[in-house]
Amino acid sequence: MIFIVKVAKTVRNHWKKSIFFTGVLTYGVIYTKNYLQTQDLMRSYCQRAAKYGKEPIAINDKPRHITVILNPNANKRKSVDEFEKYCAPLLHLAGISVEVKKTESEGHAKTLIEEIGGTDAIVIAGGDGTLSEVVTGLLRKTNDNASNIPLGVLPLGKTNTVATVKFPGKTKVERVKALAEAAMAVIEDTFKPIDVMKIEVLSTEIPEQSNKPIYAVGSLKWGAYRDAKANKDSYWYFGPLRNYATYIFNGFKNKLSWDCEALISYSVPCEGCSNCCRRSENVSKNGGFFSRFVKSENPYAKYLSIYNPECSITHEKKIHTSDLELSTLNVIDGSSSETPSKLVVEIGPDNIEYLDFVKNGFKLEKGEKKDVREFIEARTVNINPEIKAQEAWFSIDNENYEVKPIKVTLLPKIINMFYKKENVNVYN
Image (tube, rainbow, N blue to C red; front, side, top):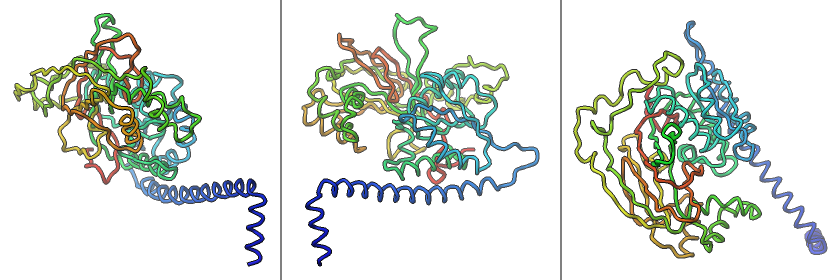
């Protein structure tokens, strides 16, 4: 009892030091706990990966070779360290030959695609921007033709929209698990085809030869929520709370895109017919490495004899909203490989009150759905915005592009992507 009274008096007389050392002790306990959990987790994944490395291969076969396109600037320059700690050891233990190519600037991943030699898979180690660049470079090279070479995604970026749906993880330990699971998906060689959005600018001011399409696997966003999220780094001094602070402070500002006015025209989803399954025949056939990326047979040939009159009908709608979002099924929870491919267009309310804006913003940060006034399912969508004096931006897979008239076309099941073994039917 005397000891307890003495300790209580010491804490009362030196309360500032007591609070400081309590904080340090708490941090130390949490750090040690996370460290031990991470070590146990990686030990179990290393044992799993080593089993694949011990499997015999035929004398004439070569070990699997993959090319990793790594963005060293992703996630505040933490990507290289995390790749070397949590992904590379698993790949090497599995007996995979790994070639790492690092990006040096924005857009460099598109160039690296041109330089890739023989490989069995391409793995993107970065965020949404790096993934979009690789997919764009690949599909530009092959003129939208389907790829035989699967893509892997290691969620090492600041934003990992598609990868987070398949490999979720918020805490430190969960993030390590997500990285290990993504690496194991590559090792286990299990993949399934995913949809891609092709985005083209509809403008006569841009020369045709420089008007190259952008490809995305996640979403396209326009409106107040997109603008608020883009500004969140301005509130860095709030630390982890900046994601919420951006909605609180930006809800009063007129510079956000509160009035998104546009004429949209769209065609309904189609599972395949002679109208939507025509593919360009203008693909390079020089016998080089990229000939491996192009399927030798037209995967859409079976649909060319099907006639669907609804597919060619264009519907128009005038919209005035504070929020517009186009998404593929890749970023929508609950969708499966059996779900027919489609674009999901979410149109928000015409006007939104401040408290509702903050409430919906908080929902988005928690991974919940915001309020939506109308849903449209489509195969192609043309957006013709009413250009106003103030600057406005689209977010395409969380990369910024100036608002212009665009055409968005769904390319269904065009690229194979590695998934967790228990969540996918093996296609190879």
